[in-house]
Length: 115
Length: 114
Image 1 (tube, chains in turn purple, cyan):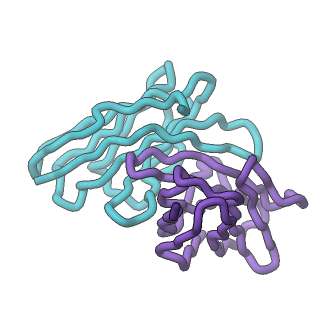
Image 2 (tube, chains in turn cyan, brown; image 1 turned 135 degrees about the vertical axis):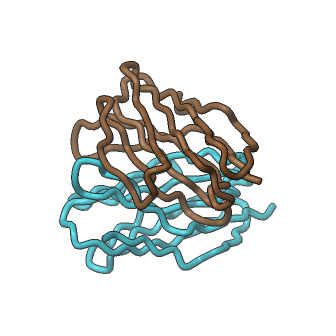
């Protein structure tokens, strides 16, 4: 079984500052994928970034980077230069092994960017 | 925008009724997954369809069923609705072809069961 833990129910950050959202995972699989999604109040789940378990480099996508520490089983999301539009719920997720590769989600972190 | 569409956007039903939710996948994708997201929680996997066959199922009872059509669009059917079925239902499309299989989500259908 796979498990994602997000221990920060809510986070505040000042506009233009960087913020780190924590995610730890548990799995017995050797091959897996880690994802971060953003969910604004409208409800749509927006894909942000992906990290494969065998990727040696940390993933980056624009202002988003994923701090992947395999030995610690952590996959923290770093958002640089926060913007007001970054205020949303953020979910960490893991893909299962096998054919379905369904996503297992954490409980989410509500990020609020302050002007 | 992802190109994944869902209908309807909102729905109100009463306990015991049946509901059908619809999803059109992104162009070029062959797989559709459905998730249920209760208020204040992360999404929970219901099932996945690949090439019109169920390709995996989460811990949901048989009254949750689905279909995938030749154009890869999909339906989620829920029979004998219960109050706890009130949730946001998210559809995600992807393309099975390698290790990374990113799922792209639609805007969701908000279901309220009274």
